[in-house]
Image (cartoon, rainbow, N blue to C red; front, side):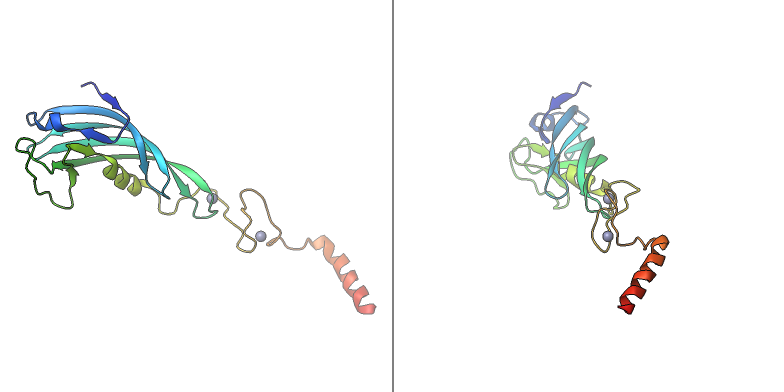
Length: 180
Ligand SMILES: [Zn+2]
Ligand SMILES: [Zn+2]
């Protein structure tokens, strides 16, 4: 089966709905989805659609890069996400009669213009793949709890103890201060 290349997550399935059970379509799609922090990311994938007795079964896999905030150092980094799903989409309008069809609230639906929109499923499945405690790198050193310095980009003086070689001098200064 050859795949049609489309630059949208919205597929017009009016024709497929009129075909016999088992009829298929394949698409390679590219679009944007908004997964985290309201910033859209480009998603690339492929979808195979098959007419079922009730609707259309979608088998999709996709790749996207999502921007996440590191849970240790709060810097932003890009996490590659691979996702796939298997969902049956049900029509909300009967393709032959044009009459509305009651579709359970929880299922993915084909809208009244026979548009099957992959966006919701892509978002939901991408969310599942995002690590709960994202890290910029596994070795992230985080932030200094005292001064907030990002310890990946530099050091701070908070935790470093006074070099013992200075302690003799320090004692001398203390003595001198007391004496004066
Ligand atoms: Zn980090
Ligand atoms: Zn510090």
